[in-house]
Image 1 (spheres, rainbow, N blue to C red):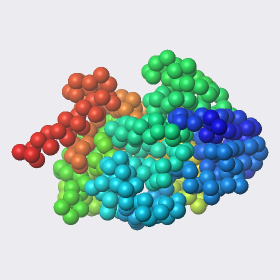
Image 2 (tube, helix red, strand yellow):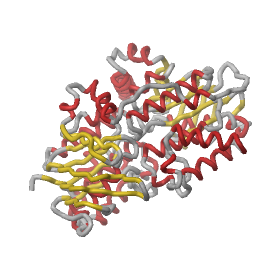
Image 3 (cartoon, one colour):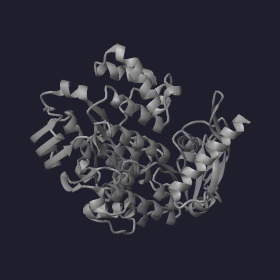
Image 4 (cartoon, rainbow, N blue to C red):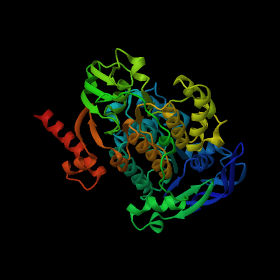
Length: 507
């Protein structure tokens, strides 16, 4: 059989939503097939049907010559699956996670030592084998999750958004690892919202509203990588920039200090380890200030200190002139915060989350109803209002999370990777709202791993090992790094700092 997966007339519904609508697809062996599409287009549902985690409501699917519905146990032994949410046990160490997955795959104990050593070396996790998974950076977690999926040398590797929240350097490493493996008779199915990744696949499958709207090589869709995202957006219905409906009625009645967000020698220390060191900056009214850096650089820790979620070891932070340590409640009242990890209530439905967050942010009566109605319409949440938040696709979780962060019209907005896992059209819409809010005077601090988004920022602070290594405009950083674009500038400046650090230590 030349195909790893054969699908015919596959359908799947959630309540009244057609997640997959009469899908027919063949995935050839020893290829990397990318699954891309809009939020809620059916990407995750398709992957779960391929692995047997979901059973088709109609049609037929054969994975590695097996029926996933009837032969799940046999399939598990020849299948590697990396779900959207890591699939790791954060209270277990790197080694213990590998042991657990080896047990689940019934890998003989005599074979494990050599297998684990290969994976440690391959994923570069050898120095961290005894570290708890929950203490790893985002990029290291993804490498461990990939290592767990690779146990037993599977014939089919299924990856659901493996590089979400991973910095550009780590993303390239993940891509390189999978490409190297795919030359060894392994088939890979990989869903992604990163178009530069998709352009490197053998075959791209574009989904829209549960249907396949393109299946072929990336090159046949676009002869160059720089035109590829636009072609995908075209297939998905196109995007026309329009004024933000959220920013339209946004009103700020606050008296602004010179620096609505201010940090002075802000530090966070755990034992002898500095998560953030000597962080100082002033963000002005209406400025979009970007924090860029590798996973584990200290960006999220900085956010949490500025939001009053963790206490600084030393230094000060001020929000709208209020000391975040001395007056945390007053300082937080000015803030809208969207966390890196989905921070809403999974057991509540979408409407329940909107109502809850509107209430804790002090909205009531008619104003509360109006804001919930507006967020529902702007972020296209209507079909999902009765669905539990934990069941949403990653893209719609991000929409809901952003809606909850801004409905009370905060003067300061902290956005920690707001567009991770969001499709290209929704990313443009998100930034339309962010730019619109900044024009109304909202001060925005944002982290992102999409280097093209860095150009939306007025200034960028590049973070490495807990410290700021450069602050400038995007153009200034590109010039400083002698680079062609922001992604190259990011890599050059980080690698230069690493080399200087290595030279200093050697000296």
